[in-house]
Image (cartoon, rainbow, N blue to C red):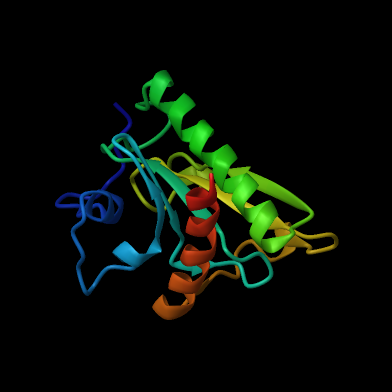
Length: 156
Protein backbone atom coordinates (compact mmCIF):
# COMPACT_ATOMS: atom_id res chain seq x y z
CA UNK A 1 0.00 0.00 0.00
CA UNK A 2 2.50 2.65 1.21
CA UNK A 3 5.78 0.81 0.83
CA UNK A 4 8.97 2.78 1.42
CA UNK A 5 11.45 -0.02 2.05
CA UNK A 6 14.32 -0.10 -0.43
CA UNK A 7 14.58 -2.97 -2.90
CA UNK A 8 16.02 -6.14 -1.26
CA UNK A 9 15.29 -4.76 2.21
CA UNK A 10 16.21 -7.19 5.00
CA UNK A 11 13.86 -6.32 7.81
CA UNK A 12 15.72 -6.43 11.14
CA UNK A 13 12.49 -6.80 13.11
CA UNK A 14 11.33 -9.76 11.03
CA UNK A 15 14.69 -11.38 11.71
CA UNK A 16 14.49 -10.88 15.48
CA UNK A 17 10.82 -11.90 15.79
CA UNK A 18 11.54 -15.08 13.85
CA UNK A 19 14.61 -15.89 15.99
CA UNK A 20 17.18 -15.18 13.32
CA UNK A 21 20.30 -13.56 14.70
CA UNK A 22 22.64 -11.86 12.29
CA UNK A 23 26.00 -10.49 13.37
CA UNK A 24 25.61 -7.40 11.19
CA UNK A 25 22.23 -6.41 12.68
CA UNK A 26 21.46 -4.23 15.67
CA UNK A 27 18.98 -6.26 17.74
CA UNK A 28 19.75 -9.67 19.23
CA UNK A 29 17.60 -12.34 20.86
CA UNK A 30 18.70 -11.32 24.38
CA UNK A 31 16.99 -7.94 23.80
CA UNK A 32 13.54 -9.59 23.81
CA UNK A 33 11.53 -8.96 26.99
CA UNK A 34 8.22 -10.47 25.88
CA UNK A 35 6.99 -12.54 22.95
CA UNK A 36 3.76 -14.34 22.13
CA UNK A 37 2.28 -15.62 18.86
CA UNK A 38 1.55 -12.13 17.52
CA UNK A 39 3.66 -9.51 19.35
CA UNK A 40 7.27 -9.04 20.49
CA UNK A 41 8.69 -6.43 22.87
CA UNK A 42 12.42 -5.74 23.02
CA UNK A 43 14.93 -3.28 24.38
CA UNK A 44 15.92 -1.05 21.47
CA UNK A 45 19.49 -1.19 20.24
CA UNK A 46 19.62 2.61 20.11
CA UNK A 47 18.79 4.51 23.26
CA UNK A 48 18.13 8.00 24.49
CA UNK A 49 20.82 8.30 27.20
CA UNK A 50 18.54 10.10 29.68
CA UNK A 51 15.58 7.78 29.03
CA UNK A 52 16.75 4.19 29.07
CA UNK A 53 15.54 1.62 28.37
CA UNK A 54 13.52 2.66 25.35
CA UNK A 55 11.53 -0.48 24.53
CA UNK A 56 9.86 -1.38 21.23
CA UNK A 57 6.63 -3.31 20.76
CA UNK A 58 6.05 -4.73 17.30
CA UNK A 59 3.99 -7.29 15.42
CA UNK A 60 5.71 -10.57 14.64
CA UNK A 61 4.42 -10.45 11.07
CA UNK A 62 5.66 -7.74 8.74
CA UNK A 63 3.50 -4.64 8.39
CA UNK A 64 5.40 -1.58 7.27
CA UNK A 65 3.32 1.05 9.00
CA UNK A 66 0.00 2.02 10.57
CA UNK A 67 -1.68 2.06 7.16
CA UNK A 68 -1.17 -1.71 6.82
CA UNK A 69 -1.57 -2.81 10.44
CA UNK A 70 -4.81 -4.73 11.16
CA UNK A 71 -6.77 -2.98 13.96
CA UNK A 72 -7.02 -6.15 16.08
CA UNK A 73 -3.24 -6.49 15.99
CA UNK A 74 -2.92 -2.82 16.95
CA UNK A 75 -5.00 -3.61 20.04
CA UNK A 76 -2.63 -6.47 20.95
CA UNK A 77 0.38 -4.19 20.51
CA UNK A 78 -1.25 -1.62 22.80
CA UNK A 79 -2.00 -4.33 25.40
CA UNK A 80 1.66 -5.36 25.48
CA UNK A 81 2.80 -1.71 25.46
CA UNK A 82 0.72 -1.13 28.59
CA UNK A 83 2.42 -4.09 30.32
CA UNK A 84 5.84 -2.76 29.27
CA UNK A 85 4.84 0.63 30.72
CA UNK A 86 3.93 -1.03 34.02
CA UNK A 87 7.26 -2.88 33.98
CA UNK A 88 9.20 0.34 33.37
CA UNK A 89 7.34 2.13 36.20
CA UNK A 90 8.03 -0.81 38.53
CA UNK A 91 11.67 -1.43 37.61
CA UNK A 92 12.90 2.12 36.94
CA UNK A 93 10.61 4.23 39.11
CA UNK A 94 10.11 6.62 36.20
CA UNK A 95 7.82 9.63 36.56
CA UNK A 96 5.95 8.98 33.31
CA UNK A 97 5.89 7.08 30.03
CA UNK A 98 5.88 8.30 26.45
CA UNK A 99 4.66 6.16 23.57
CA UNK A 100 5.58 7.17 20.05
CA UNK A 101 5.12 5.61 16.64
CA UNK A 102 6.43 6.93 13.30
CA UNK A 103 5.10 6.36 9.78
CA UNK A 104 6.74 7.04 6.44
CA UNK A 105 9.88 9.10 5.80
CA UNK A 106 8.27 12.47 6.58
CA UNK A 107 7.00 10.96 9.85
CA UNK A 108 10.58 10.02 10.86
CA UNK A 109 10.14 6.27 10.27
CA UNK A 110 13.55 4.68 9.71
CA UNK A 111 12.85 0.95 10.11
CA UNK A 112 10.24 -0.31 7.66
CA UNK A 113 8.34 -2.50 10.14
CA UNK A 114 5.63 -1.05 12.39
CA UNK A 115 6.89 -0.53 15.94
CA UNK A 116 5.74 1.42 18.99
CA UNK A 117 8.29 3.05 21.29
CA UNK A 118 7.60 2.83 25.03
CA UNK A 119 10.01 5.22 26.73
CA UNK A 120 10.48 5.96 30.44
CA UNK A 121 10.25 9.64 31.27
CA UNK A 122 11.64 11.55 34.23
CA UNK A 123 10.78 14.95 35.62
CA UNK A 124 12.74 17.64 33.74
CA UNK A 125 14.40 15.12 31.38
CA UNK A 126 14.04 17.49 28.39
CA UNK A 127 13.37 14.44 26.22
CA UNK A 128 12.22 16.32 23.13
CA UNK A 129 15.34 18.50 23.22
CA UNK A 130 17.47 15.34 22.97
CA UNK A 131 15.29 13.08 20.80
CA UNK A 132 17.84 12.99 17.97
CA UNK A 133 20.76 12.12 20.25
CA UNK A 134 20.33 8.35 20.25
CA UNK A 135 23.36 6.16 20.85
CA UNK A 136 23.85 2.45 20.30
CA UNK A 137 23.75 0.71 23.66
CA UNK A 138 26.22 -2.17 24.12
CA UNK A 139 24.62 -5.61 23.91
CA UNK A 140 25.58 -6.53 27.51
CA UNK A 141 23.93 -3.40 28.87
CA UNK A 142 20.77 -4.07 26.84
CA UNK A 143 20.72 -7.62 28.22
CA UNK A 144 20.77 -6.23 31.78
CA UNK A 145 17.80 -3.97 31.03
CA UNK A 146 15.97 -6.81 29.28
CA UNK A 147 16.45 -9.06 32.31
CA UNK A 148 14.94 -6.41 34.59
CA UNK A 149 11.89 -5.93 32.38
CA UNK A 150 11.47 -9.69 31.87
CA UNK A 151 11.47 -10.17 35.63
CA UNK A 152 8.32 -8.04 35.81
CA UNK A 153 6.58 -10.26 33.26
CA UNK A 154 7.68 -13.39 35.13
CA UNK A 155 6.24 -12.07 38.42
CA UNK A 156 2.80 -11.64 36.85
